[in-house]
Amino acid sequence: MMRTRVCLNPSRWGLLAVLRLLALGLVLTGSPAWAQVPEEPRLALPGSSPVSISSIPAPPVTRLVLPNGLVLLVQESPFEDIVAVELLVRAGVQQEGSNLTGLTSLIQDLLSDRITKDTTGQDIVEITGSLVTTQAEPDYARISLLTTPEYLEFMIGRLGQALRQRASTTSEVDQARSLALQALQGNQGAFSALYEVFLDTFYRYHPYKRTTSGVEGSVRKFDPQAVDAYFQRYYVPNRMVLSVAGKVDGTALAELVRREFASLEPVRETSVNIQWEPKASEKEVFLAAGSRLAWVFLGYPAPSLTSRDYAAMRVIHCLLGEGISSRLWIELREKRGLAYELGSIYPDLEGPSHILAYIITRPNSVGESRRRILGEVDRLKKERISQSELEDTQRKLIGNYLLERETNQGKAFHRGLAEILGLGYESDMYYLRHLQETTPQDVQRVARLYLDSATLVVARPGGRFYLDF
Image (cartoon, rainbow, N blue to C red):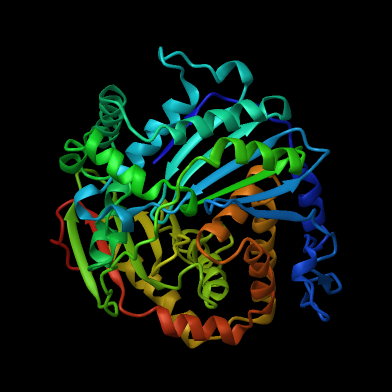
């Protein structure tokens, strides 16, 4: 669940420059000194000569660890007036357990109010033009701040003050709980509801089967005692990464962070026992839909963000269902007119992930849509993709990578994410290297290894009373 407070209209951050480079077939990005090797991998794209991924040096990143364990990452960009601050906390569905599902999301909403409002409930951030966003993900909690150098100290101070308040009040918990219940009781939408059904079916024991927003029954039970126990156990400095990018002075920022966060006390790390997830088996769920449309979700196991197979599966995801040039779009929509909407999902997860192809179609086209999707999956396993198709897909993925990290917020977030997951912030750059090293053989091997034992969720009028399977 994401919550955003106060709008900001930053200037365009050079996206057109990157797009022009991509249009010319150039793959240009930075590589700090620690990532350089004697012979760097190069990718020959159609109509271009091989280009090194470190053609443009990136500004160095400073990593500082406070005595209490908090990790600070800083990239100084003196010519950019927007400063991005990303605080990531190792707290998610694995820490919540089945009885506290949704608690991280509630605490994120509570922290958003602490940062943006004073004791009377008045918004004191709006005048600064800053943006505050909170989000709960399966593996981590995220607090994002976008501000200007003029108000950076103020915003860091608000963040530090919110975290130093280790006990919650009844009123703020009641308000956060009320917001959470309103969101749960609202119109969730068919897609989100079916995705939750898919997750609950796909994962047998793993906490990923639970949603970050929780369920109404558990959220109603949250009180200050439950909030404080969870907050004091997991929202601690040795489970935090603070990543900053923009027009800052690294030395002054480090002193500011020490002043605001040094008093937070670390907690001894305890292991979380994650239920063993057995090898996937074929599962089918048929639901009756209260509309004239039909939904087909077809998913498979996929490697985690930390796996060496991750880059190859990214290629498969892009090739299969990402955008109007994907195989599913061309085969199912353009050639056969089966889809009102289609695509694929491959979430970045620390643990076992999944790749999901979905289509919204006519009720009497479900059987054919399912067969066509399975046919494209089998094609990936039986036929190696051509070198030209691989290079086109790599170029698209590299372009997406560059665009996601063009802004200071993108840079700060992705480095912080790699750090909080234990990979080290520099591993975010290694993804490009792994992507460029991916071969057609790698794609076929990963497809054969993971794309087996599908989980199917179908929703259409009448449920299962069709004879097209």
